[in-house]
Length: 248
Figure (cartoon, rainbow, N blue to C red):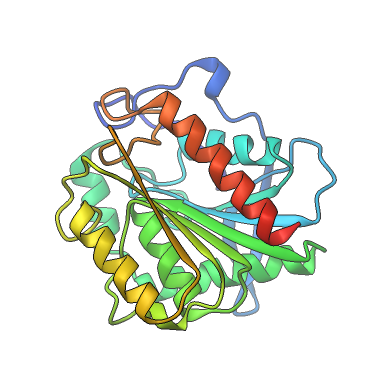
């Protein structure tokens, strides 16, 4: 539960000490009445009434995701990074693919919705949601299947839209994708534009930001091969501003 540093690999390198998550509070929440949900909770000591649910990449709830939670918390949000894999963290692409391939997306969405409810029960009046790669797809699936969220900012991931009807989304969406993303059928520009078209057709308040010079995982601080620090900084600031416009 919480953040666990994964082994350094070409996909999830060890983070510099300045980027390692500083939060110390583990968080549990009820799923169907049981204390089964887990996550990493960050507030940076701020007294915010606005919550943000953060969803991991396919690697798991690693230090990179928790450091990102801290960054959002520094913008004035109470952030709950949900541990979708219940403590499991991949240290290779093969293991990450196995974990994601075995994930029950419906159950994961349920966890996410209950996490949002848990924040509201703690007094956070509005809750936004964001996530990366698999977490981006789960972000879209969550807002397509629940009205618990006041704003959504998915990053480079699109779910099976037959199970995540975009027209059902009731909150504003800011979707981030990279122009150079080659994840065909999942996060490439063509797939992003299909998502945008479905959202526009459904009357969703939807903004697509295609980041020039960015490929897949350009936000991943633990992967120097894909990480684009300047773009990531801009994207986090843009997302924070988006959440503030719609939730403060």
